[in-house]
Amino acid sequence: MIARGHCLSNVKQALARSPVVAILGPRQCGKTTLARQLLPADHPLYFDIEDPVIGRLMENPMTALQGLRGLVVIDEAQRQPGIFPVLRVLADLTGDLATFLILGSATPELSRQAFEALAGQVEIIEMCGFDLGEMPDDAQEMLWHRGGFPRAYLDGDEESSVVWRKNFIRTFLERDLGALGFGLARRARPRSWVAFG
Image (tube, rainbow, N blue to C red; front, side, top):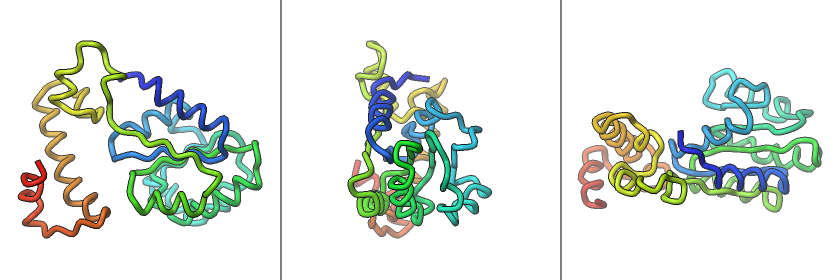
């Protein structure tokens, strides 16, 4: 694992001054890994909305979150849009008693929801893959070749890294571009990626 001290420090500073902090970034850039340095995944105040049980619990976010104290982490927040107005209310009610760290994929819809519902109460931190400032001095060539996504960079062998990158690009084309408003027919997606490259 690459220590992401600068990102972690930014998040800690934000949590000290804001009732709600949102870490937004592309899938697989390390948001969850970073949050788990602050609160382990098995902690009762860590809510991963991709977990079906937690997802059902968060269908009524006020009941699930009201009365909690300390750091509360909500991972994959974009999967439960109704959570943002509730966080606004809870941030007002709990004062300094609870701080909410929400993680989500950087989509226009999530940014809009967070900005609209939590205006004045949320601090947004954008996260991306590794950059040279986080890497050892001799990492430039490998970072350039494999890219900054942790799984692609840290994979033990080149073949596994290539397979992961190809699959990531495919899911990006099929899922994320659609969410960003780029409607491409399935047949055209591989050709469009070549055109963008």
